[in-house]
Image 1 (cartoon, rainbow, N blue to C red):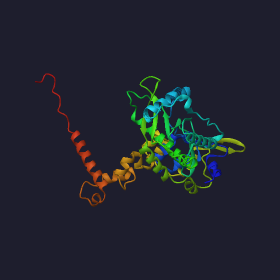
Image 2 (cartoon, helix red, strand yellow; image 1 turned 45 degrees about the vertical axis):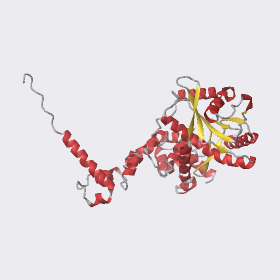
Image 3 (cartoon, helix red, strand yellow; image 1 turned 90 degrees about the vertical axis):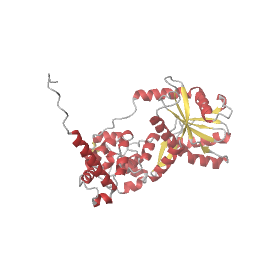
Length: 394
């Protein structure tokens, strides 16, 4: 798909909203959602779109958490990243000589635009690898293809080892208490690190071909967090092989953006502005909803923590009675039953377990058995309790 068509979808003059690793990890977790693939590929601001539809997202990082995270990251990278490299050496390279601060290269990665920064990052990685020393790349820019369109991601840091290997560094502000952190937050950080490793792999292959040195991206990322309840950094090595394999497989399954857009009416747009007699007005929510509904979605409850349009999609899913709104596990157990009405009808269609329909569909048999057990439990609960003795009775 041409960039012009993507610009038409988000609106003329509207800057594309960049994808980050957090959004890419969420997109890879639900590759069947064509709606998110198209909106993310076109750079549409889903948060503003959800607000215009009347279903704003009720989540997001607080300003306090952002400021705290930025302050901790600055603390970790101060003095040329001395603490960061010390932690990396302790966790990932204990058998090698520790790097001296003056031996660590810190290349300048500034350039114009994401394409320029991506090219500058690739050049810096190639030069550092060819030099055969330590290098710390602060906020490099990497590109990864998502549904046929490039997405630019920015890890906190990438460290080049003297042996030609590269390590992704993730710096988070949640604490690591007694050497362990919240499992859900660590898992989210591992999924983000896997996106960065995936984006580094083609750069590593190109660097190896240009420098003649063996280059590989390590599948263990360095997670840096505050130690206990202080602002002192500590770290742990996180194995991202599982997350990397999952992300690679799921992103490969994503339908290409141009294939999704070809099925849309030519006048489809997600532009919130409506030009009317030279004045700019807000596009009616009904028109925006029609454009959004023209693209198929795959709502699951996990979307509530990962997508700005989740509340809108949940409302539509409930209106349609789709069983997907109950979760992937429930959807898998119900087999061919697609709506809540079908489930209720199957559960109450009969009580005979030998019914031919129940024999043909194990889900129907399980539903009828569950309905019978529920009726039995309710009948037992309806038994009146013994009456209390009257006062004065013995």
